[in-house]
Length: 90
Ligand SMILES: [Zn+2]
Image 1 (cartoon, rainbow, N blue to C red):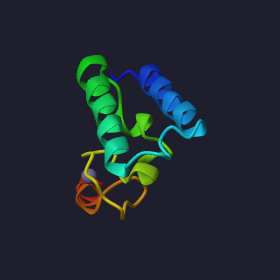
Image 2 (image 1 turned 90 degrees about the vertical axis):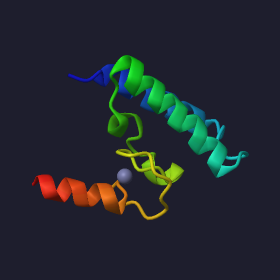
Image 3 (image 1 turned 120 degrees about the horizontal axis):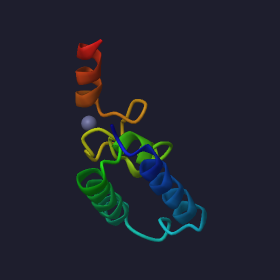
């Protein structure tokens, strides 16, 4: 059971920060570090879901929502390694 409301609350926080262009004046790696720190805190302490937090933003931050790898070639939010992992579970 994961904390869906907490996950979507954080997704909306990212949306608010993005709408106010809080990520536009900083280095991509700085934004990635901040987003990863939020996601790790939320998943480790509050049982949140990485995919729900990053929904609509994985591509923007070049972060795979599954493993949080820095990847500019995400497919539906997933890096090639995680995508292969998903395919194998089908
Ligand atoms: Zn990945």
